[in-house]
Image (tube, rainbow, N blue to C red; front, side):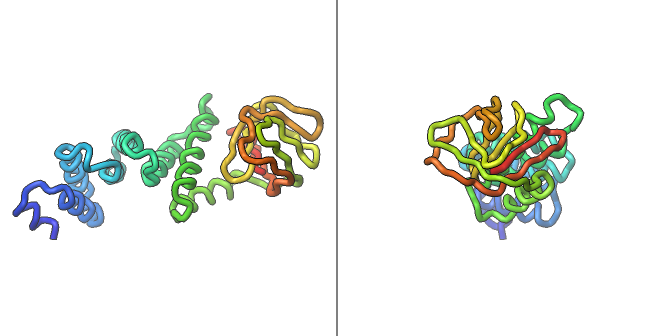
Length: 219
């Protein structure tokens, strides 16, 4: 179907992208890479972030991981809300993590932020939900207690004694993540970023991770 307009009308963008998708589905990854590359070369702006994602997926299937990462990054440069690019980049970065490296914690947190950002863009995306579920299933364990956060404040108060240390990463609610700066008494601690939403108390679902990446708390 897509070959006909390519023969009769020349290099038409929809036909190039369609043919690239067909070749990828047929597991002709080199052919898909060629078609996506042609579309990006002839239509650098109109082909958009989706063509870069397709090109990156083809590169990955061919074992070209660095090219795949570059394609996903370029897709995000063109479309910062491209969920597929966010997930692709996060997965490749996680696969290359080295738990013995000094930047392991920083890089692992960046991966989770990418997946969390993708979830904020599209909360109905099953792929995003699956990767988030995998992370929380393996990384978080429940602990008792609730916390209170005041609008504009940087001090979090717990209903029970919380054994947190400076540098521990915490999550409050669904979209607020920050780092513990110092302890504030037995039941409280100061965080790096102020709570920007309205004041709330008794946040449930407290959890923490004591893995190599540093402890993480979720409220």
